[in-house]
Picture 1 (cartoon, one colour):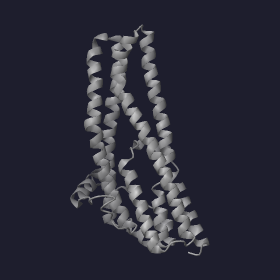
Picture 2 (tube, helix red, strand yellow):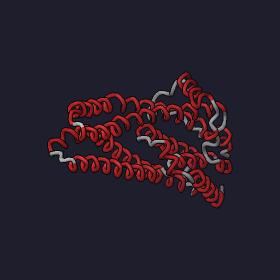
Picture 3 (cartoon, one colour):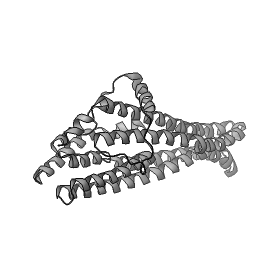
Picture 4 (cartoon, helix red, strand yellow):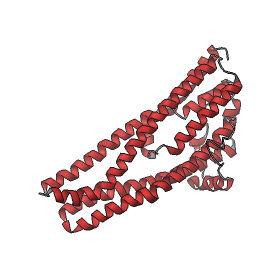
Length: 302
């Protein structure tokens, strides 16, 4: 039975890993927030200010170029490094809880225990995090391990694609409105095309670079999530129809897990406040879906 999943996920050593990955993802999102401020908020404010104080033009143009370089050369790599370490710690949690072997080729080296301990201790200042209990739906306790594992893997892909597509639509609309507003203010103040190019477009150029990168990466991540959810559905069907042995299911789950790790480590993040705003009843839907998988398994004779 998959009781090992429901009990193991709440073991102190596994909660420790969840605390560590959440802390590191949080640090990476702070860097992402800094990117947003430096490439969106400051440039837009500066471009508007330049329309009223033209003497700022040279400094703002230099700022736009400098921030673009800083974002690409320093902030983005730093954010990705933190995200990758967090994804590896979460992968170690999954391997232990779902009884999957670590894949040195697909995932790389294991995260150091010292790093896990340090990040876990730093999360919430050492206070408990009740959101980490029962990370995967407890309904899988009624399933064989090979089936419970697939259900848990599927929860990692739950509404990721829909969330990312909604987020990137909002993002595109907001950035276009900001750009159009600044241009409109410039034209209304009698700025020439040259003045708009140098005094407005140059300072807000980092905003468009950041926005285009976010738009493309969120779309690619959404497509990947859709593909993986389809793969997990195919694996589930093969499992309940008893087309594969437990050993074969384990191998397929490991392959699926590699793809899940790749998505986690490369997909762009979403700010927590946006995630919470859009998810609301997601936990309830997750548990309902898990109960339906249990029903299907029982109907199939498991």
